[in-house]
Length: 549
Image (cartoon, rainbow, N blue to C red; front, side):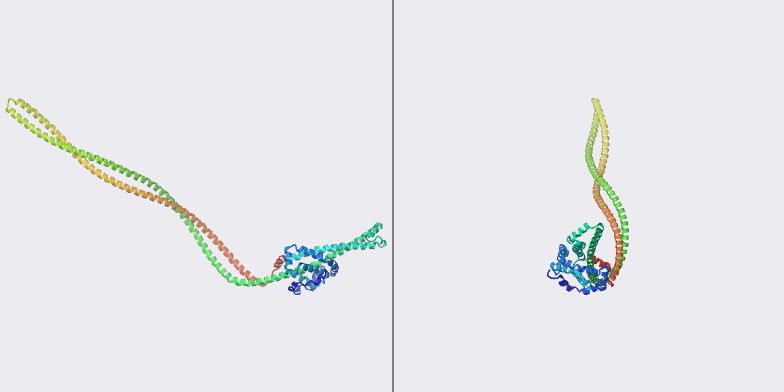
């Protein structure tokens, strides 16, 4: 390496953004604090001396340590993001790393030393290096430095053994070194061998002990470095928290101003809501009770409608039966009318026959009159013949006999005519009575026909009325069925409405409870908003959370 890494240490572009003096003052890192920290980890002048002795080793291995250090960082995207944000390139950062390693051995370990360490920690935070990676990189230092320290300890132990062997072989210089020492072991007595072994062991132990103290000194200075680096991160977090706290206070004041009036209005509205919900709850309870009563009444109505439907169906059945009977009665009336008209026709025929008989009787009566006249004339002839016979004695016997026979014939004829007249008189009487009865029958038949026609008209009216009644009952039955369905639906709806009213009542109670809780939360919000404006620092838990992040 041509240039000393220390010549460029602390001269990067970002250094202008950090005031290290103000930084260590704000984190309280003064001379007294530095001494207290050194004392706490037992870092003293001996450690400073041991670290100074390591300068040569560090200078010899600066290149390798820096290369291995960045070989561990560059594969990780998160650390590469930090490297890309740095104004320095990777090679420049390696040079800075070499300078830092040298300061471990060449530092003054006073205020200026730790002032520089504070500056380094702040720069890492500005670049966005997470604290976990910043502290984690010290683990990389341990491995890299311990590898070199391990080699150094081994070399020192071997050198010490060689020096011890040289002292033990002053009288046998030809053998020299370790071989001479081994020869001394072989040629010595048992007591001498024990002494030599103890002397060698003490030499090795002393050298290992010095190597471990070197490691302990490195650990102590790295621990002090980590303390200061952590302080710078905590300082940054505190600044962020303070800024956030200021923003919170400002926001709290704005929130208090903005929400004070709405909170008061909300509180007032909550009271109104509480009153309204109570009133609604009372109404809902009343509505539930009313709906339950309505449901009971609807149930009764539904039962009545079902009974009406059953009655309507029965009436409909009877109407159909009456309609059939009316049709049958009308048909019977028609048949009776036909029979009456047939009787009437037959009566007319009988009447006509009687009239014909009366006419024949009249003809017979006329014949009888003619016969009676003839009998009288024959009687007169017989009397005349008798008188003449008396006058003529010679023919008197014959004439008398003839007159007597004529007289007998005439008398017999008169008797028969009288009997016929009597029979004809009876026949006329019978014919007259039959005629009267037939006339009465005609009158009654006419009256019966009128009544049957009236009955038929009435049966027609009854049939039409029954048909209308039947249709009406069908409509009533259908309407009743529909009404029953509607009543069932209404009952279901009323039951559902009752349940809904009960649910509404419960929901309103929930709303009332939520409103009470809202009122309580409103008070809590008002109290919290009031606390937001109180003066105060972030609590320690907030800082610890930030450190964990």
